[in-house]
Image 1 (spheres, rainbow, N blue to C red):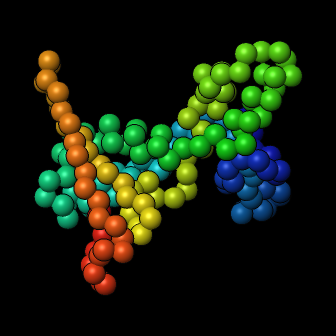
Image 2: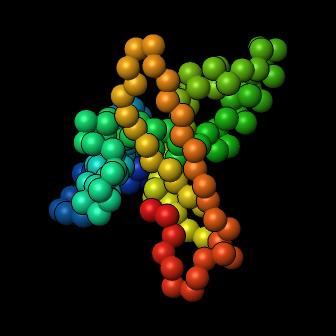
Image 3: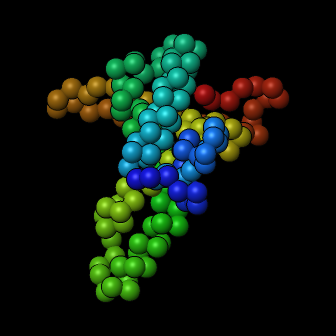
Length: 157
């Protein structure tokens, strides 16, 4: 799709006027979405590698594809697009469904924020592993109240 001077879309380099060397325009579509998702995935891979260097029992790199998809999807949102599609379904007398919305907007837009946020109010648990056939696994997490921490004591990663 050719670039346009009007939003919406991702701003990208585009041919400018005669002799203009800094032209740009707005582009959109699946190619742009794939590039943006790939960029976020690359940032997340770097973050996983950094955490893996700091934490001894962090999931092995073989689980990175699983962790990447989970992080990208977890941080995605339909935003106003979901409501718009549902409204159109209503106006057309179609059955409202999450599947129908997902056909148009997929998982939604990837959040700009870091998917591995840990602060005073949020914790992100990262776990991955292989479970043998006919086996089971359970996890239990014990979290202390933030007020129970001593000043200067670090939180969970």
